Amino acid sequence: MGLLSGMGWSATIQLCRSSFSKARNISTAELSEMLDNNETQVLLLDSRKKEEFDVSHMKGAIYVGENGEAPEMDEAIRKFQSENAGKEQIIACYCSVGYRSSRLAEKLQTERGLSNVVNVEGSIFKWANEGREVWRQEQRLETPVAHPYNSVWGQLLDSDKRATRP
Image 1 (tube, rainbow, N blue to C red):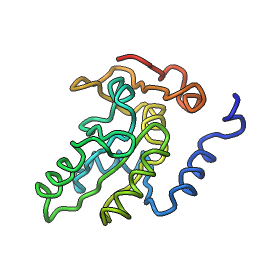
Image 2 (cartoon, rainbow, N blue to C red):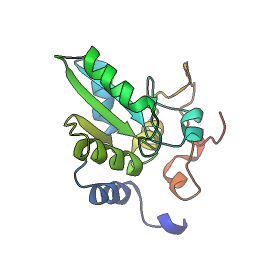
Image 3 (cartoon, one colour):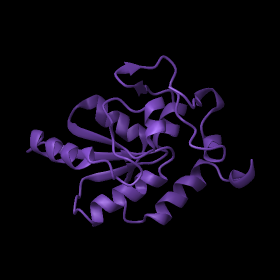
Image 4 (tube, rainbow, N blue to C red):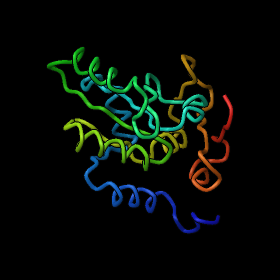
């Protein structure tokens, strides 16, 4: 297992938390509940590489790049805030396991002053492993899959959930 030998989900989540201690976190179950109950408006920001996003993403997610560098991010946030003024809002960042999205969530909180930003712990790997739906463009995939990122971190993604091409 190489670098991940002995480092499962709990160690990965702890690594993300300790590396980006200012980022607020929610679980995949909490995100799923928010998406299902419609009481909270959720903007999903995908902070992976484009090739990862093209394999699959959460429904309605906006691709923003690994560091939020995609120009669509600022406009998506402005539009989301405007359209949902007066409603409870959450901006949920996710990536493969939560490291890049923790970094983005912390950046949006500290540099942009956004208080309603969270990181989804375990991100799309955990989401897919739990059998939750993922999408490719506008199509729901029958079997939830995700790009494994690389051979090390991809070990956290169940083998039947790994896909490297759309």
